[in-house]
Image (cartoon, rainbow, N blue to C red; front, side, top):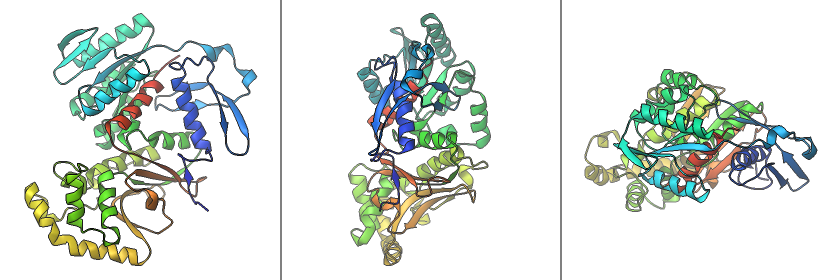
Length: 412
């Protein structure tokens, strides 16, 4: 009686098959598959797929299902080696990315940090133009594909994206900045991509979860996105879960979350909802909405206005004054059989994006999210939402999200 389609459970959905096909295609060169194919059971029948792919500037690959005997010599062409520069390799996600790359035998060509970069074992001052030159030289000499992986939060690095993309260098990034920033600059960035370069940023929403790829794959396969709803903050999921049923007060839940290391050093950075709002902008734009700007969104912060500008200590000690009002709000929602979640909602039909506490009836997918990130995607075909759920934060899962994007940049 489940009213949802889960991307992470059986039976395997058509979209899940599409994503698995895309991943197999990208992994095939590393796994030494000269003829990538997979046998999958959907509980009713067994299908054998073989695939041909066409890379696009949006990073989407089109997959076609053919009979095993219809493959031509074209699909057995050798993949080009990846020439990868990792920017931000000393950070938490960066170290995890290098570890993940090492596990699959992918060696970085260049390593870049804030002041220096190492290329071919030689450390020199950072020069982003020269980095691009060196990647292109290596790609030409080795017949490879140049890719820059950005795992920083630096605006300076993102300012270089257009230069790299316009020269045919792909970018795989976890940096949300420009994708949630001013729409005009975002569109300029998209327009700067010169094939075969690709601009991929799966890890900007939900870390390694296949959220953005799912939306793009749905659109590419003739779905119309109707609505996207998401629990996109593990911190806020914990806090709202802790206050449910009166188990804790708001101030107790925030204090516990801070003590457990779930929040930023200043918990207001989580509670103000701005990180969720940035992700909502990205989801809205990929879903097809235009005119969406972060500073114009309807965002409800959980930080009382009187505590917005004070010190962290004063905020933590003063939050208890708002426990009673927040508990009453939670109780009112729960009296009707619903549950309060902090979420983003992109209503494509109504062209509305909202971020804040959302009252969800008992059957809503959010009620099974727990501490996870969870995205529910409703389309003209998936009138019962397709659900993507899992860990939405952490160095390892974010790194694997970036790594999949790197692999999708591979050319043949």
